[in-house]
Length: 236
Image 1 (cartoon, helix red, strand yellow):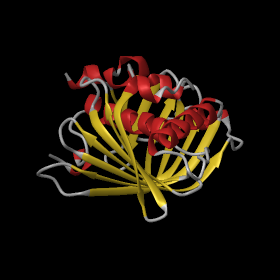
Image 2: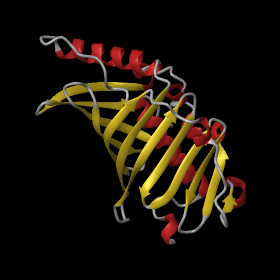
Image 3: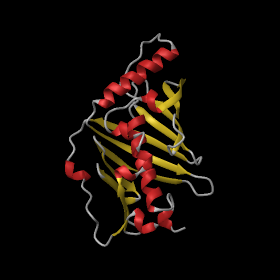
Image 4: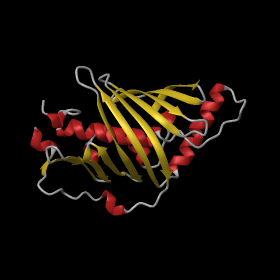
């Protein structure tokens, strides 16, 4: 397998995994913004947090945050990448990578594009054609409902921070469980996603900006000079 396929084997799997990452950030990065009563029982505190999360992020229009991601799958070296994620609902996203420099993932709400500069390759597919999008799509549309999509919630303290875990209700999704770490003021600093294939995707977040001014042109993909477009049909 070539260097450009380090994380993903085909155009469809590559784009689907990146779409899943974006959805999960929108979904799971919403565990911020609700201060629970100091003496609330654990279950009450968790319920209050989930409700507050839904209300806050379902009303959010844009989001920007720095990320560092690590992807580990059995039999392959661990891959680490970083950059900035910009989101505008519904369904528009842009991941600008600083490492590796020039790498880019863009969703314009209809199509998704992944550009890898090493091979000057653009992978494209319809947003609605990704099976990964069926259940989590609601998160991107501002219709977050944790208890509809997840089960077996648990929340514990880790030092001064909160750690929340949950399992996906559907086994048809590419991930099976999640683990979030949030500060006392409910800002997400870490997220761990375990896939159905036992792969592990870890995000560290910093510098979150809620509802920043965002240029819509950021979500219009421009074909880089000399790049080649690849679609799922072309790889079959």
